[in-house]
Each structure stands twice: as C-alpha cells, then as structure tokens.
Length: 328
Image (cartoon, rainbow, N blue to C red; front, top):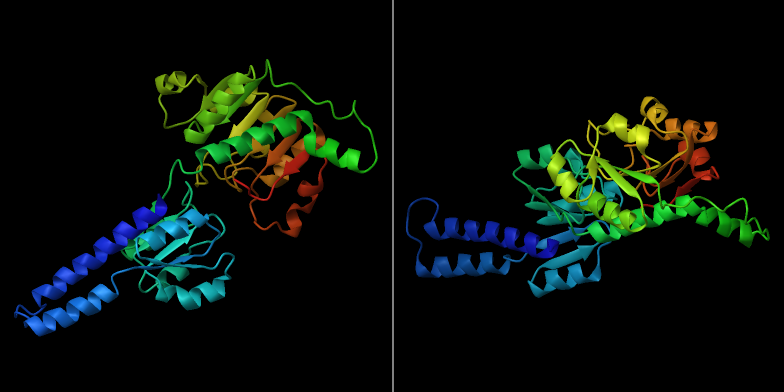
C-alpha cells in the first residue's frame, strides 16, 4: 500500500541522517550529552509530514497514522497555495488531479518522495524529481479492478444507450426503438494496451461472447495469447474491432493515438471507450468522426483538459458521446 511505501522510505532516509549525526560530521567523537541531545532532536522529527493534495481513501490516513506519520489532506488545493506550503512537507500524495510540475518540485525543499495513488505518473515531472533526489512511486494494480469495471460499464452503456435512454424517459418520452442499441455477443473487442486493466476488461468481455484482439508493443505474442487475447498490429485492430477500449499511459508515443488518420482506418460503426488518459484521443477528430457517422459512438471517462473547458462543450453535448468526470 502507498502509505506503507512512503512511510518506510521516509523513515529510512531520516535514519541515514541520524547515522551521519552520530559519526559527528567532523571526525570528532560526540560527547554522550551532545549525542543524546541530537538523537532526541532528530528522533522527535523522525516521523514524516505528508500532504495529500487530492482525495484519498480514509484507510490511507489510518495507515499513515498507525505508522506515526502526520497526514494533511487538502484535496483540490490550488497551485499557488501548493507552492506556498509544499516546502513544509516530507512527502506528497497525489492522484490524477494534481500536476506536479518542476516548479512545485523545486519549491518542495524538504520533499523526499512523491506517491501517486494510482498507476500512471504522467502528471508528475519525474525527471525534475529525480534530478532533485526525490523518489517517485506509484501503486500499479491498486485500481485495476475499479478502473476495469468502469471501462466495462462504459462499454455496456455505449452498446445499449443507457444514459440517453434514461434522459429520454425522464423527459417524458418512451423511445424504445430509438435506444435499443447493439449486443456485445459476437462482436470483436480491440484492446489497446494489454496491461492489467486491459486484460481484465478483455476477460470480462469474453464472458459476454466477444472475440478479443489486442495491441501492445511491449507484451509478447505468446503472453497475449496466454491471456486469451489474439495479438494484432494496430492497423489490423482498427480494421477488425467493433469496440475499441484504450488502456495505455499518456506518452509522446500515445498522445493523439486516435486521430483523424487512425479513426479513418477504423471499421465503420466502431464504438470507442477511453478510461485511460485524456490526450490519447484527439477530441476534435473524434467529434467529427461521430458526426459523420463513421464512429457510431464514444464513451469517455477522461478529457484532455480537466475540469472541461469551453472547447470540449460540443463533444460533451453530442448525443452519441457519453462522458463521466474521471471516475476511474
């Protein structure tokens, strides 16, 4: 668990500092009195002061407290305020909301570790942190099931028009024929990124009678097959998939992976789900593809700008596009 990782690492760092103090620094032996005084001062400050700048589960706070660390929770803190106070803390815990920039890292004079309560660290300037000797850790696997379930919910909602049908009914209409949707059974699911989450989603979709194919430049073909996923090239995935679900980090290689050109390669009537990262899908290109009918619909848990900005308003209001506020 993240609290345990952070706590142990910070405690170890401070133990190393104590050892240096006991050596005396200048090669001279410390007197027993001075040693005791400096030990008590160092020991008093042994426990870490940790800031959580995004919402975290209550269990995290309990785990930090059990290990004697002080956790201060300020979810939604503004950048200006974060810059003012980050220097007071030994550790920083974030989710996807906080962008840990070089500026913030430079202001964290006492920072020893940054923990990402989740998988991706693309919202942390890892290079800047490394250059300052600050450890960056994450919790891969910690949100595998919850994010996978959310992606599965988006696939089903997209296939059967659940949000649109609900809104129609609440508006006083009874549009059964309009919102019947499409079955998953017999369809092909294309998984982009066959990691923990992608594999779980593929497994569940096979339970619905879907064929699962996948693209992952890192995973070997045999490993993919061991997970019940037929490995294919990206172009072949675009050509065959009735549904595409995205489970990759946002990198320079995956930014705008789904763009005008790649969307045109997709099978007509494809449905696209992105519960990974905003910026992997070119939102303007997606909107045009949906409006033209080439893409039947899309379901997104992430946007390039969060909270959303005016530029994405048409995308968010389109009747064939489902969006949730980064619940994963």
